[in-house]
Image 1 (cartoon, rainbow, N blue to C red):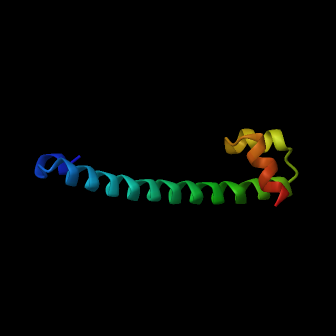
Image 2: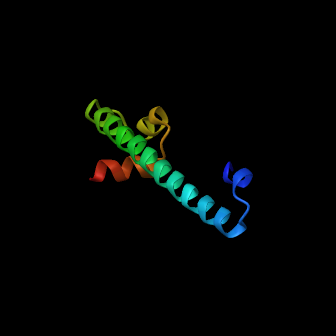
Length: 73
């Protein structure tokens, strides 16, 4: 990390790393939720078009459990 080059205090360096790492996790979680929301819309639309669960899972590259959970909402 960049703080390794500029912060000599190991405790402060660790604190900065944890904060930045935590923020990155928040961003990753947000991005994953957006992907899942998009997939959910596609799953629902494919089901309306008459596709079977196995086909929807294959087309969307999602698990059958994800497809079933989405359709049960």
